[in-house]
Length: 138
Image (cartoon, rainbow, N blue to C red; front, side, top):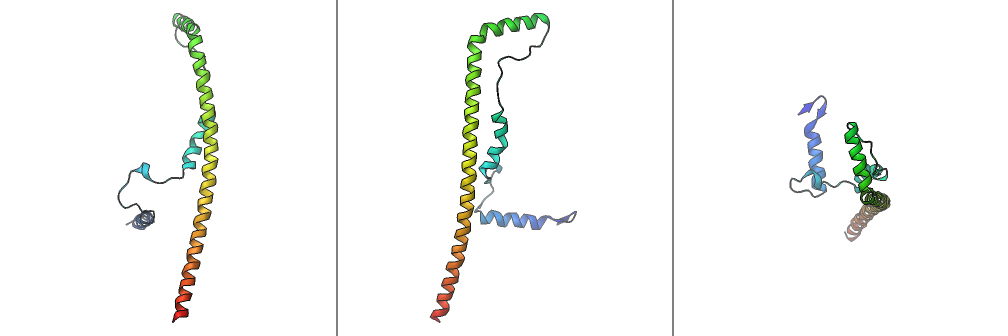
């Protein structure tokens, strides 16, 4: 089946072969597909690093409502303001830890690709040596 010059069957066959290579034997949910974790993590880091909760927000409404909101906010300041400071601190610490984890995951992914490449090279050398050994035996 070809649509606008795109061979859909060929693409589907490539996807099926890739799924067999990765050992997906049955239909899986989208969330189960292996995605590099750093890609997902880096997507949210800018939001976490810049996330600051402000205690004071502009008040809306008519004059009476704004006045009541100001009074309530001032009465609850001793309770709410320390919580917002703690939450901001917690978010900043999480963002810092996630940045470190992201860097570590990137390093591990690079190391894994290097090791996989070494394995394929060694397997090829081993296959070549075993074929040479078979030839020598004959």
